[in-house]
Image (cartoon, rainbow, N blue to C red; front, top):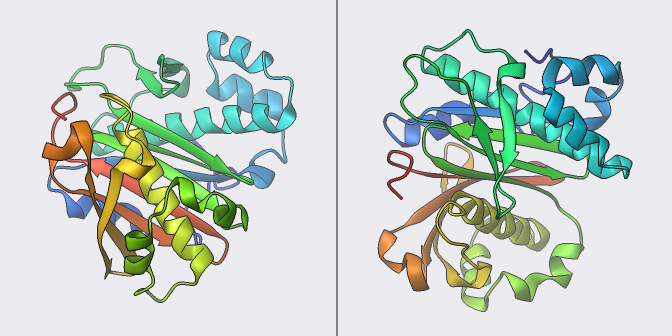
Length: 261
């Protein structure tokens, strides 16, 4: 398991009630949710961490990364995904799995997925999602399709606004109490979380997602979207978004059994 040195349990970006809020929204939904601060996590024995969390094949993959920033993001992303999986399995009554029994593989789309040993009581392999931004790395595991995204609030959001934000969407967002940079961050992480949660079917472009409603509940923003084209008949996609003073975090979960979406 991760010690508190490697895991931020309750911070402004990851409040301790966020997990419960996400699970309570959908009956029967179980999630594992982890956030790591890169500087704190890597201020220690790297080799010990690697031996504790990475399988032999994953160690070989790690060695292929020569650029330190990408290497650290990849490594800590695997830790987040494995820890969130362990937490999810514990919620399902499965507590005897070791990180080295978990492999994080990558599909043709680039999306990570789990490879687990046969586990009594586990009906289906959980879904996972990983995200990182400027020193923060986060992982999500669910008994549903799920996606997570984290984004540092920088001026880059203004430069790429036209790629993901329409005028009607900005008009909806300006009714909130957030400043413009935070509004763009909210929309970005929300759409990115939806995109990741749908990668098991077909990719969904940012401009095919239409924001219909923005509401506040228990201190979190809920953004409701309809999707054009091939997802048009699947109803409303809701992303839970949280903002601290520098980052946005977005989580999307699609109710129902894996494979049903």
